[in-house]
Length: 291
Image (cartoon, rainbow, N blue to C red):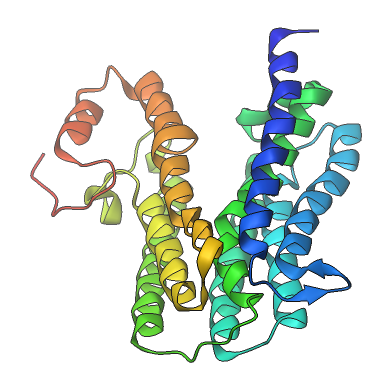
């Protein structure tokens, strides 16, 4: 067994342990349905959906439905929480925010992989059962962690009326969602132009920062956390790790570091790219400077 496979097997119980700890914290003050905390049931569902999707994916050696499964997992957990929870105004606001984001991003990513044919991240991973299974398990935790504060609020025993904090959170969500949608559309249109083949995008929002789509993602999940905050109590506050997790994931692990490494590998000798990196911040936007 290769070292990477052994590391994947060792990572699986760690992933499950983090999920179990999160399930315990979010279940404090959670509604109970069928003898189990609704929050914990949502966490179990997150893993179950991804494990079920892993089986045909591994047999077919395809990652085509990986991102789509992630979006479906978000939607499934929200439906479970809204269907069995209190169904108050805060829950519906959170469900609408998460649902719109998941539907938009899931369809966007599925269309992209359908167009491109494959995702290079999975070329080696999908050939290894331990590594591929670990990746699907990690996606279950990713969804559960990201959605945790919204789930805690939606499954909470207490119902708190909406107020100014919810309005602030909704404004943050709307701002982040708009930034992400515009950034993705600008990049898609840039790539569709044959004249831009092999070039990097440095126009539109991409002139303000190098990763505006990630800025939008972090902003909208911060908005979700702000909306959820008034409904949380006690150990449920640990679920506020959600926007922190999104930030660390995108800025330290799988987002900006990977894309910056690919960019340097592809255009590292291009003076225009080096100048773009020097004058353009990675995440926090600022007005474009002259080249």
